[in-house]
Amino acid sequence: MEVDPSSGRPAKAGEAPRHLHVTTLPSKLAGQQHPTMHPSTVKRWLVLADVVAGLVGVGVAFAVQALWWPVDVDVVRVEWLLLVAAVPFWFASAVLNHLYAARSNLRRLDELKHIVGTAAMGVGSMIGLAFVLQQGEFGRRWALLVFVAVVLAVTLERQVARKVFRRLRRTGRLSRPILVVGTDENAAALVHTCLL
Image (cartoon, helix red, strand yellow):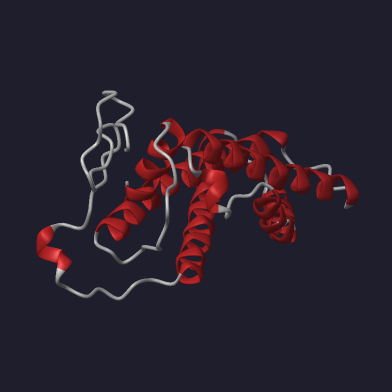
């Protein structure tokens, strides 16, 4: 006989323990067939959204620099050169920081940690390239602006992505079969994460 851990009473046959709340698709959607999205398609869209958010962050950094700390055109050219040369390092740092591993980004704090790590490694690669290429005109203030602006832009974009993923899961377009064995707090947290 199964016992409901939240109350200590025997559980009814086929009834989930009370502390686990499992939701299903809304009844109006239950009969409709929605095409599901393949995980690789979702990941490609997320990478594209991250790139756009990163470019917005870089654009904000250039705009702030132009407004508050104007520099010569030659310095801006060097900054663009370093930025373009560092693109492979930005992508490598995103992979090394597990920015696209869904299991590593379940909590928002973990995701923020990975975003900060990616931006730090990306800006560090630009600074390293400036040192190797002996570009003395490279501004450390601009590098800090790029770091802050990219972290903010990608964090905001990831919050929007979480809402989009939640909506896709709730409508059945982004789902996969899972089996949760157990009823402890970890199982309840996993069910909550997968359904919301």
